[in-house]
Length: 337
Image (tube, rainbow, N blue to C red):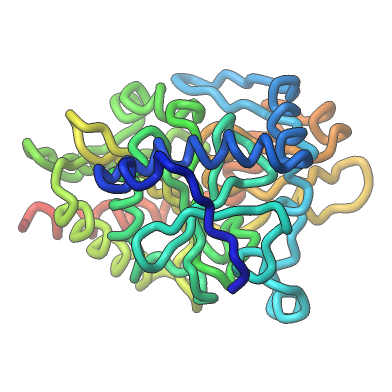
């Protein structure tokens, strides 16, 4: 491993109180100073073009972001993955890129192609596959230690541009519309599966997305509910690596964890593959499902409409019939806890 570790006099104290949000902020500001290309990409966000589509009770924003072209168009088939160097392995990072160690098994990197005003990638130090079943507990710890950010997981066939290397992302808290709108969406479209003082689980179908939400003050409870859900979802999934899902996780000191799990039918919509003027290069992942739909081509941003956005979301989201089955099965199990 080449020498990529970031050094700064304030880090030791921040680590001692597990203030990784503060450490990440220092890393970002220092990388902006030393990495011209990165600074340019973050400055670009100040002038990014946005369209807002209003749906009953929630919004979806379309963002033209040319810096995300590699991620959106990434080839994730086995052959393409095998022929390229992994850009999350330490030896293959950008020459200017520095990292902060997170405990013994993860690194914190500034994401060089940002969506958020503050955007980080958190890869495993080793080249291990993108899988959530063995690392969901770690994601919850990230949420607490990076409490100023939302933590993001994209499944290996649900928007992860590096499905061969375990990683998470962290982005500016409350930047995604779904977090400001969560309670109204839950009240309007949610079905309570369990409601207790320390645990609330809902199944949410807002017409575009299928979501299982977990709210709890106890990390072990969040893990238990997730694994119960995962086992149910796995039984109806035809996917070999893991069921199709994206996850957003947020931690608030006074309220604990809020985890949103988006259930999927497919990786990419038909709009991605058609030829001619009807093609829209869009590959929804957690950020998109959270309310910021990324379009790396300006021509697609110009022609995208509320109706097209709705088509894309509905096509990639799990069917209503399967979602109803998952909710019913999970509710039966949770009521016995």
